[in-house]
Length: 498
Ligand SMILES: [Zn+2]
Image (cartoon, rainbow, N blue to C red; front, top):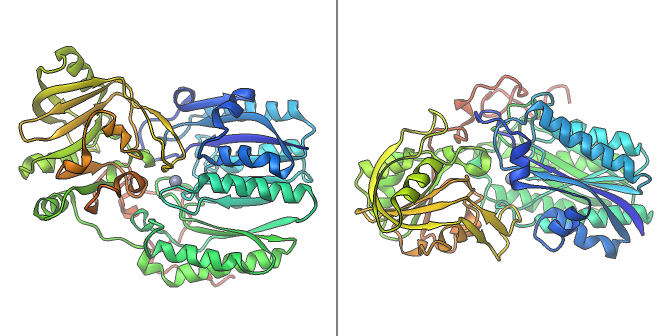
């Protein structure tokens, strides 16, 4: 058996979000080391699970180092990055000699000191093992991939599904790439191509065009002789970093030119369709009116500006305020609002409450909305999801949770921990039947679809303001590369220097 270090460091950093990410945010979600890492991740749907599950058949004995995960939120503070990186480096040094290394990173992780935190982490880990030990990395589809990440690793594979349902498959692929490399069957080399292109977050649903076409191209590259793997990273527009944008990556067996040719071919094909990757969506007022007129139900309104999975606070009231203003009825809205939960607990179940819900994190996500209703339930907020869902997680904790029913038949779910809507068990575990509501508000774009598609009669993406607003032009970037289409329409690919 070959000894392979296993390390995970996953955070989607929204540099426009106001709440910085600290060590306690990792402790709250998942921070495991040594045996605890193996116990936590074996047998799940995450890429770490895929790698661990695929290790033995590839002749790999995993050497667990550290795995740190936090909810998407603001930039990671300097001390927290240092603490996690130092622990990973020390654990790797203590495990030497290793035959290989597996890094489960995100690709859109930003710390105060290192805008390319993934690249810095990969660099430090590479430094410990030296140039000759193979290093395989997995990344999230929302990665902003940098040359530094690619220079520090031998092979990279990136989720191909959004919502992310193939994480385990990518972990298995990483184990296979590493196993074959360690047996001397292959020698992977990789190439990264970054056309000056933004793919709107609203156009990143891989089951539908235009995104679907990117993966058809990817599949055809996989058929090229000598190609070992191929990836598309659609980018993360809420990280203000130089490498923000779409990127294309190919891994070939020993042939650098072949890898480069494959990456460029995919990039060129995407660039030629660049206009299709831009979005024009209804406002909250338009979307609520559309939902009220719709003959079918429920209509899911995706509140893009308050995308919890993209680092938003999860307490925006912009859509709720429209629902109230337009006198819509029978809507379900989930809000992160610990203060209102405490008031409901104080009032007690079956009792009336008056609340000012939501919009408590910052001034960019609406104002608190006055609600009168009745406390139907107080729950511990813990729920399990048996199916494969975006993120690869199975157990969830949204903190003490209150369900409030209003005379307008609205169901408000108030949580004390913010939670991305990736599982319908989030509300079904509270006795709510989402399929019988008229309007469901989900705070995300694509990630909720695996959960909500089975009940949604119709899904409307909504252009709401906020820390995850759909339109990159609404943000002031200081660090991104220029030009980038469509912010700079004069962008060219290949650029004149290529
Ligand atoms: Zn993602």
